[in-house]
Image (cartoon, rainbow, N blue to C red):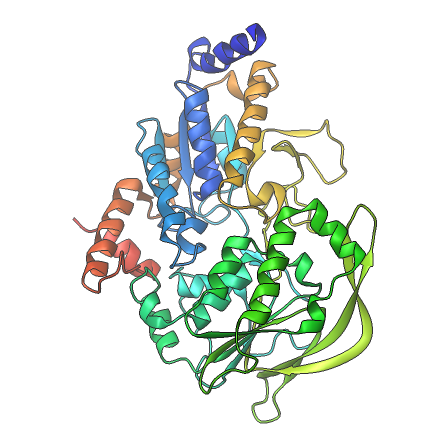
Length: 487
């Protein structure tokens, strides 16, 4: 206990021992970024923290990833706002790492740089036909209905087909299915983007297929998300009875995972609870297990457009430690559709001068300390450079997972300060915020501070109140910057 107290005193008093404050820049203003900022501000009294983001708006996936009909999940924004309003913290939006300012420049300006910019690309399936029109990533679709400036022009064709196929059965896949199938009268009172609401109101989609490589025991969603999609008003649920048969290996998995057992129980109950056939015009949700995509099929009538998915049937093979993987059986079938949404995982993107593991899609690190290369040498670190969130561990977990992730990264940072590992970067004063703003001004980058975001926030809420919505999101950079700059 005495050692812990001594360390805590030493961490907290770093700025007093030094003749200059610890200057930290966090790249990315999602949960990982804000939790890291909050922890640093609490742990290192006198430190100054700047958060930059390439968008004019803060909060990352809380704003652009959380489904519009999950407002309670967005309440964490209140906590993040308090962090941004701390006198030692600043938010600078519309500042892109790479184009507005380089990583090397940030390292020259700050004692510590923490990368927390998440995962803004997608894993590819890697099969023929993936570039056909009508094949989209779930991330693009989520950005589209959430009003992300980079997703507003997606324009998915929901009019000319009644069937959508979603590859994947995780929470994002279930979110997408729910948005496609939920009555639009219920979505109309959320903060869904107006262009998406209009398209969904005119949508012809009546059938959604959720396709998974493995079985119901291995489905990657949570019970909460599954209950929600199963509870959609007047929805026909279809699950093949044969898909629900379980093996001793499945029993072993469920024995070791209460979550997997609960998922299986919910799916089994849903399979028998409703009628055996849908009524006329009823919307349908089909869970398709033990299938993997082999190729996307091109339409005969509309060249260059998707018309279905060629699926291979799979079986499960045990690989030890209670795990089972899907293997192809050589048997195939076609599933017709007019739109495909790939929900097989997000992927982080590298920036110049940053070590990056392309295979794993993460920055190589040990407890948040960025390694100098991909060799795996755990002793060769990039001095003063840290990572947090999906960029650190891959696109897994819920919002709160980033809290524990941030605590680990900040603990590493604090330990490095205590042990003198950062001496070369911390013994000299750094320009920090003043230097950053000077460079951005020289490059005519229009910075959006938190006070300007508050103008955006106020205007979105005003526009929303006119439509009985919590907010009406501004979805273009031009609109956002115009409101941010208004008096």
